[in-house]
Image 1 (spheres, rainbow, N blue to C red):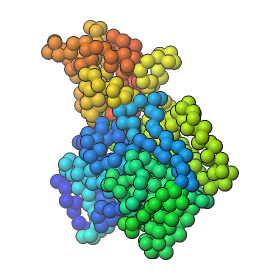
Image 2 (image 1 turned 180 degrees about the vertical axis):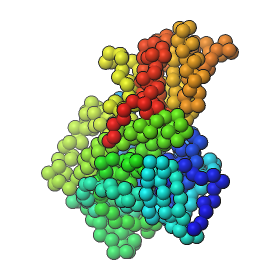
Image 3 (image 1 turned 90 degrees about the vertical axis):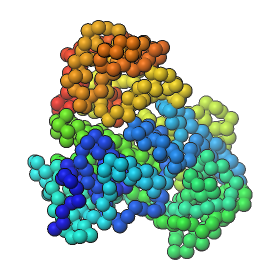
Amino acid sequence: MTTPQHDTAPAVLVAGAGPVGLMTTYELARRGVRVRLIDAADGPATTSRAMATHARTLETYDQAGLLDRIMARGRVVQRFTMHRNGRTLARLGPDYSRHPTRFPMTLMIDQAATEDVLRQAVAELGVKVEWGVRLTAFTQDADAVHTVLRTPAGEEHLTVRRLVGCDGGHSTVRKLLGLPLVGHATETWLIADAHLDVDLPQNSIHWVKTGTGTVMVIPFPEKGRWRLLDTADAHYDGDPEAVAERFARKLRHGLGRPVTVRTPTWVSVFTIQQRMIGTMRVGRCAVAGDAAHVHSPASGQGLNTGVQDAFNLGWKLAMVERGHADEHLLDSYPAERVPIGRALLGATKKATFLVQLKNSTAAAALPAVFAVVRRSAAVRGRIERKIIGAMSALALAYPDSPLTLPDPRPAGAPGPRPGTRLPQVTEAGARTDGWTALLDELRDPRCTLLVAGGVPDVLGTARGTAREHAAWLSVRTLDDAPGEVPEREPSSLADRDGRLRAHLGLRPGAWLLVRPDGYVCARGPRLTPHALEPALDALRGRRPGREG
């Protein structure tokens, strides 16, 4: 039996060092939870796999303090272009008007690069991936999880307080928990990564109708490099040159222009799975990402949904492990994320149908349909808004969560409602002192209580709350002239013109309680201990949770 190379025993074991496991580890470690991260593979994956990073995930990376590193490795895409028989049927752009964000884009960054950024981030927090370490068995009781690991040095028995399975579609953790993936397999597609000699802009994803099927052409960050997806012919006999010529032939037909496809660096045949589990937590064990739900890659949701799982679970586990919340807080993880996985299966099923478009009647109607789209800005706008709403995850909300309290205001009142994300603002709208300060505040790993100043007794309540809960709650006031009274506590956010308070719908004395993942838990017209107590109890798992 070997001994873990750690100064102190880990509280949490994370199995799987892909993006989901790395993000889970990062969120725990930056909150002071001891984590051990293992992966059965010999080392990092070199193939790209997932590529698209959507707007809500970019907001997540910003809150986690990782955005600049991620953006530096990717390519911004803001177009979706459709081609058929040498004609451009439509160019669709992003319409985020109903879902304001500072990141109205999809960032194309290959998964290997994302994982590299996250590995560096967790290493800076003192956690290194242990490669070649496989979880083979575990049991759990009321106090701990007792695991058996196969390591290069032999068998190891490790007892931890929590186990998180981020170990992919063939998850050992999920199987040992007895959680079946329910669903079905659908289409089989061919994927190839290659350099192309073709006159296509790389700020767009291209959909190319090629006879009975379609080919998706997706840009990598590197100039001239693309991902190709064949939705009709998945045959591969091991000859990458033959695959290159087949793609080139189809693209020449669909684009009506010269195309050369160079020898692919990676070719793979995969069957699309549409499956999920009924819960994502059993006792002291949880699963996230592909371990909990697998689905079509048609709209690029896999990595994004997995990162959101990790972001949701990480702060809750940390709150419980640090003694700031009761065990019931963890009930909210499956309650919130299982419905997201279920909705995702439906959305990706529709996206798969639209991407491959095998229906001959629908395909024949394409020119007429998109002639209308080109002529009508209103029709085009509706299509663009629908695509963005489904793909970006900006519309995702938790109104029915056990952590969400009812909004006391009438429908249509300004500001984010409980259960929705707080940073509903464009890049231009965020260029104020107030928003700059608030966005920086959201990078604090604690919960945040925002209080509109101007009412003396409210400031007294805020001051007492800050003192009592400082370990897990940041209390900030919004004032016209912060900093002019140095002894004032809690500290103020600069909102000299009042625009931030107006945007958030906060009148003097009103308050807003925000979760560490940026979603609003509760709000009220006037801060008092009596009004605030139920919201603080919810965030600490002191209201009955609902298991998903």
